[in-house]
Length: 328
Image 1 (spheres, rainbow, N blue to C red):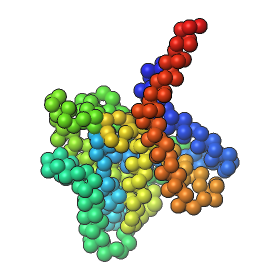
Image 2: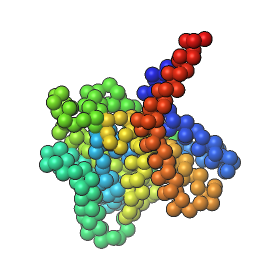
Image 3: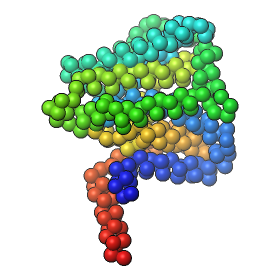
Image 4: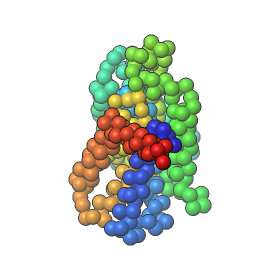
């Protein structure tokens, strides 16, 4: 039991923090635990969680993806422009946009893995280029509304369950299986722990890096389309807030920013924590600036909890407890 808790302590702490925040928010806002409000909170968390899926892979592999905002924004704008509010074009537009998002990620991965460009530089450059291209293409004008089918996937329900939560659950299952059971997951953890050791051990490091960035582009593009269904229309800058939240969700969920550790189950908890925090601020009459302060503090605390010092203290607690039990 102690070894299980030690291995998964940060994920467990993230879920514990989520429960505490939920109770604190309910204390200041009594209606927060109502069924409708909890459903809305889960839906909002789903968008963060979907964006964070690819970012989780990238961070575990020792990288970072800063191109997420405008991959998301480009997917949203292109979908609305190409579909013009109609459902029928979605059958070729949606696959095209998903492939396009993955292709942007693939380019990022090739730049990092093959040409040795630092991840921050490569993905930031891709983000700026995409922003410029979309501004030129649209001229800053508003786009048509989202197709009804996308709106259904984002805000519709099957019985009492929002469709977006079912989509998120399927994605979470796939991501968890890839990390826990597939060779891709083993390669990814090895790469994040030490790229040099991984390469000498026979891990296809270049291919793994390219796949992680491609998955990040794919998940950002998917989130962009779904988010457009939630808001009803795409708009410039709609992906900007998701850069920080995608990284924060992964960090809060227990992944090391340096790579080599973490799991998507932790990122799910991180997405929920961030969404609940967003709901707590209005209850406390705090501004959006305070949210950034809280985000930073939460990340600092969670990353500190993952440090070697805390790991040693955690192990010492269970060692003493075990010795005491044996002594009794």
